[in-house]
Length: 201
Image (cartoon, rainbow, N blue to C red; front, side, top):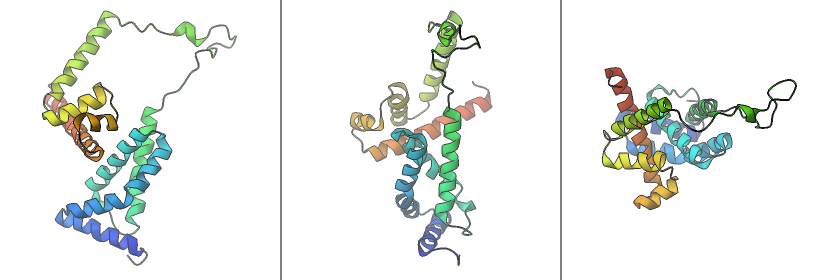
């Protein structure tokens, strides 16, 4: 504690309030103080506003879930940014796709190019059946959510609307949209996990 700045000491006091008393104001204060900085860090990593927003919310969610493990041997901000950065790196690693130009030669002689190896976009009967089954499973899972969260998931991931478009569609503040979408994804994950454990999927 002696090595912490006044700001870091205040952060720690909020952490204690949040952990010991489940003080929502303390959670809000920590999020308000660091949300913009975390967002800018995430945006520099992924170069996409919506992804940066998602990663920002995820960073705080992960930090708040294990807030009781934080110790004041170093500043809360250092601990939080480490969580956010690691989460961002994991996201990038999972999403990274090796790009291959359609004109790049595949063989050493340069005769055969990638365009000759492109698969048809048409699905064979088996692939169509698998895709239909996956859609059915997802719809069944969505039906287990409340109408509010179900609608959020449909607009975001089926209709592929932006946060701003969802905000306008549902006439909700964009902050509410982001918070509800995060909660909806958490609930959907829990349902999916339970379904797999019970063998229903």
